[in-house]
Image (cartoon, rainbow, N blue to C red; front, side, top):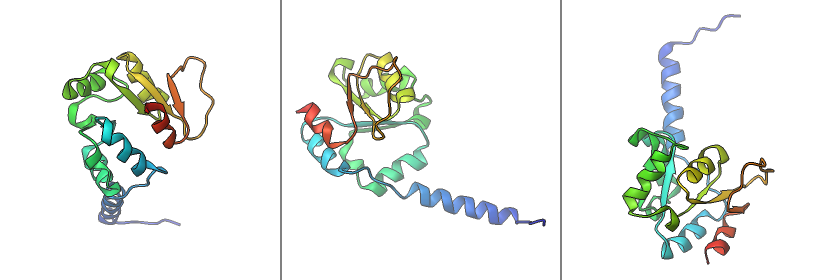
Length: 153
């Protein structure tokens, strides 16, 4: 059986999906509580790979964008994690040294590698309790976001 779908139908479906994807968010448990507590005492920033048209609206849909002083999206600055350039860019924007920062991320390949290259302490958000490869030695590891509050207090 041969099915022929008009190109305009495919294009419309694709645009609809992209719009819905960019304006929706699935929240991690306790994210608002953790960000509320952290924002009282710390300057918060986001480093994310991807497109501005996706990442910023998703943060807005989640209602969390106001917690962050800087939101650095790889597309906007021309380099992505794990490049040290994106981490150095944020350090420059916030006028911070690596020693003043704790980077929390959920990717060993992108977050951990990038943070290690610029000597930023790293906390691995290991939500799936995966066994780490021997070469990965994050300074901290949490499996729940609430545990982050215990680390910083």
